[in-house]
Length: 235
Image 1 (cartoon, rainbow, N blue to C red):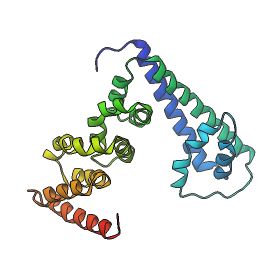
Image 2: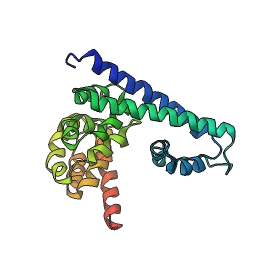
Image 3: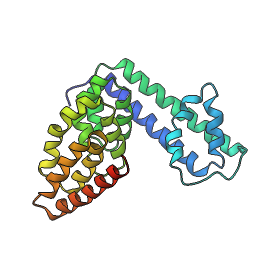
Image 4: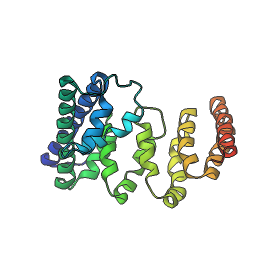
C-alpha cells in the first residue's frame, strides 16, 4: 500500500468502526427483538429509517428465528433505535469516504486483504462505479474462490460485472487460482462459472476430471452431476 494521507486513513478507520458498530447493533436486534418484521415494515416507510430498514431485507429472508409478538415493546423500540442510529452513522461515514478521499480504490483494495476490514470493503465495493469494480476484479475473484463468511458477497460482486466482459476475462484471471488449486477452488469457481456460462463450467469440469489430485477429480465428478441436473431442470 502506498503512502496515504492521514485524512484518508482516518476516513477509512471511521468507516470500519461505524460498520462494526452497526453489525453489532444488527446482531443484537436479530437475537433479542420480538417483532423485527413489524419494525422493518414500519421503518421502510419512515423518514430517517428507510435506508436502515432496507439494509435488513436480505438478512431477514435468511433469519431462522421467528417473531413472537406483533406489537413492539419499549425494549424492542430501543433496540431498533440503536440499530438505526448505528446504521445511519455508518452510511454517513461511507459517503464521507466516497466523497472525501481521492484514494478510495486503494483503501478498498487494502481492506479486501484485511479480514477485519473485509466485510465493509466489500460493501463499499458495491457502491463503486463499474470501472473501479473491474480494477478490483482479481481481489474479488480470489475472495470468491474459497469458503469463508464473505465468499458469496465477493461472488455477487464478480457477477455484477457485464456478462460479456466476464466471459472474456474470468478464465484467464482464474488460471492463477487453479494452477495450484485444490478441490475447494474448483468447487467455488464452478459456482461462479455456472452462473456465467455453462460451456465455461463444462471446461472447468473437464479440467478437474483430468487433475492429478484424486480429490479434485472427485470434485469434477460431483460438479458434472450438478451441471447435468441443472441442465435437466432447465437451468
